[in-house]
Length: 345
Ligand code: B12
Image 1 (cartoon, protein in one colour):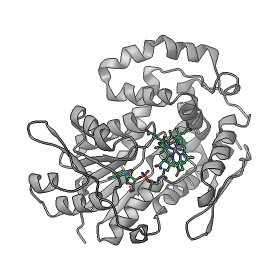
Image 2 (tube, protein in one colour):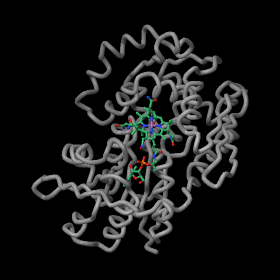
Image 3 (cartoon, helix red, strand yellow):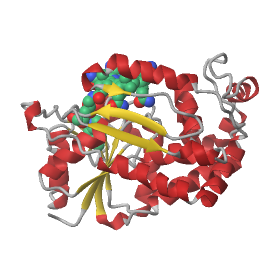
């Protein structure tokens, strides 16, 4: 197996209490076929940095709120407009987390320059944990409201290793939508048209063996940009049977959560960081149960019965226990200890 690696990442605003099934299935399939693949649930890191309640409130209020945060980092020319946007200002005045249900789920934002500086630095610290010379390809899964976050992170990875190729895939990156994104954002090299297993495997293997640009552009299911800027969309390349799939590999999701248990043990540092971020957002502490949490759990149970997902409302001052059964019907308990130290417990 080559020492060069492929990373598949999921960015905010995916729900922090679930692993990304996209990352987990694609990673498992690449690994089965001999590619050194890793997953990155960076949305969990960011949720931890912002505070899990704040994170939930952002993604579930107006999806645009989440996109705005990354738009500020992605489009420097838009920064002053974003800071002065009257609609965002209005949300700051009329809303807060405590009465998020009455105020249509809006959260109290204070989008200051200081907040964005710290938000940016938090991402740089995540990226600092990797040796980017080892990575030949990074994939981002774009399902819902993950576009600006992924474009921003792709940009930052390119700054660290311009040779590392970037591919996007998922519901918001397939077909002509993916073509349009790679046409307008030069930090993107490829998009995936439809199911990702075979196209991502073939692309990874082609890049790892230094195949020609033309051979890479011929890869079925891959959307690419020609030298003339023309977008080429190859037809999807699907597995013949779901039986070819591995059991999804969610290890890195659980490893990310384990990091936070370590952090919660080092209470002093964690406190300092969480308080700083909270101060930047000017968000008050609150003890009310997040109404959005109930909604997600209802939606999850309703739409996802076949996967047997079960959740339990968190004890706001103690540990969270979320239970899910995976395909093999195993029961896994995840412990989130974030609230205890956030509230001085
Ligand atoms: C299950 C599901 C949910 C679950 C998610 C559970 C979970 N997190 O695992 C729940 C109920 C929570 C949910 C919530 C929502 N969902 Co939903 N959901 C789905 C559903 C039915 C299946 C998604 C899935 O798990 N597929 C299985 C995976 C393995 O397949 P996949 O995502 O297609 O990924 C494959 C390819 O796309 C590709 N791929 C994906 N990523 C990448 C990355 C790379 C690098 C590559 C190469 C390839 C690649 O390869 C993968 C494997 O073949 C889809 C509809 C559908 N049939 O796809 C809607 C869908 C994704 N949801 C949608 C929406 C709108 C929502 C909500 C906004 C609803 C709401 N109003 O609250 C929220 C958003 C939550 C959030 N913050 O992300 C839309 C998204 C529309 C869009 N982006 O344009 C979809 C497409 C439904 C629709 N047609 O409207 N959802």
